Image (tube, rainbow, N blue to C red):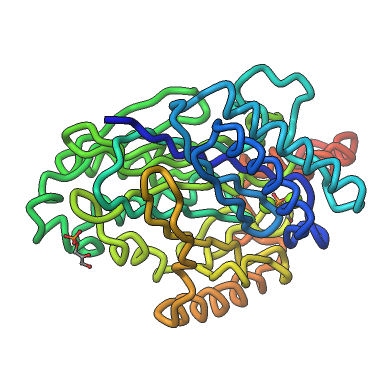
Length: 365
Ligand code: 13P
Ligand code: 13P
Ligand code: MG
Ligand code: MG
């Protein structure tokens, strides 16, 4: 049985206008580059998409995860798109390409990466989530709800194929360590960590038999660059149906617009708004942060789709709640808890402002 790999590799290589959206010329350039790779037989199939100013390369192939040829293809594609972005003077051209020296793997170089390898089922529905104006920990709560919470996922209770639960892999992105929790038995240990989204990030979910169910991009740009260069704007791949949650169970967590870090200058907490692609552009205050869900059926490695899954009035209420919450948070202006706490602000431009005050501090009376 031939294994298939889905690689979703994304980068912000220039915004139109400002950081708000992607220019069609970049998408077209990326499509040309990936079509070339498909014609050469490197890719089985591809789909180029975007969320806000982030360009998302969705690729299927037979080369496995962390493959040098695929990563090179993604890097070269981003570089080619950066040239187009430069020619149009787009904002932040090449923003997420943090190094000139590509060495066979895009991890740690700026782009976000989510990849999984599996044997394709007779029917293989997958959902690709793409976000803008937020950080890698944004998937923690939704992934928890999809795979661990029986109030969200009916199948955990009533379907024999989900009843065993799932194993959840968590990364500590500050110390570069990984840990796996057997759920539901270890749900409290899991929550002890993943509630702290800036440090602990759900990397992957597996069935108890070891089959991959979901994988996310965990790259934190600020930790890679050591300074603020933009937000992670992460992606996540989730397999659906049968031994995995149904499509509706995978989307249900987004009816509660949970609060994530990101928004204007990557420095604020704001609610994550589930939107169809046509609304995946933040004009207001670089927020509320956006999430798009593209659904595909995979057929012999080919991507049938996408269906724009949040293009559903069923999410109108969540969008309204987002706007109400955003209005309330915005009225806090530069105050916490709208603004991030100081340890997270270290990775923004605020330290440069505080430096100027250095000489003016005197001892308290
Ligand atoms: P399965 O067909 O994957 O068992 O799921 C049922 C379902 O999709 C309910 O929405
Ligand atoms: P991006 O990470 O989407 O480029 O956003 C950067 C920013 O500062 C938005 O205000
Ligand atoms: Mg940008
Ligand atoms: Mg972005």
